[in-house]
Length: 178
Image (tube, rainbow, N blue to C red; front, side, top):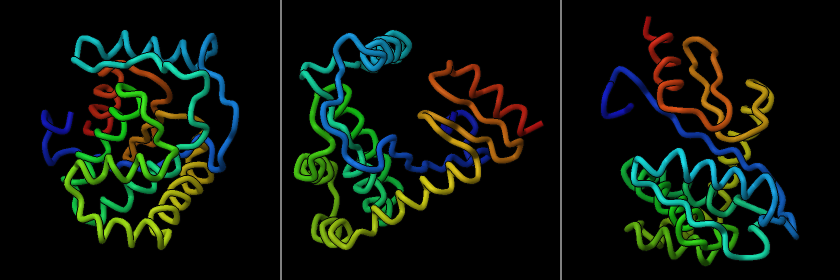
């Protein structure tokens, strides 16, 4: 949609950790999580996006390190943020890598071409965590967000919650542009 509409639409990514604190023993096999992963794979296959079923007994019960990393690299550049954002999704959903592991996340960030000295300093200083928690608190208190994905169209206040077809997002944007 960004390519299609250009500067008419501004897309702002905000972080929303489903678990702001680590959880242990997050099952995947034979759960709603596995079913969701399957639905995502089906919906995105035509776009060339590949979801690899999680091969491990448990999912990482924490996404905060990856979300923090994205916030840290966004300070370096928007282009780098886009690369890292996509690379972290691919690491988790396609390559079955643990995005709760700060070392794994740092390797993904480095491969995307970040200034690692700056990234490490920002990450260790908690700059990313503060930004993530600020996004989380605003999402919950201002918009009642409880799940991901949730897209808020600010001009109308319309929320698109959960897995939706492109046409649903397009209709929400067209409503705002009308």
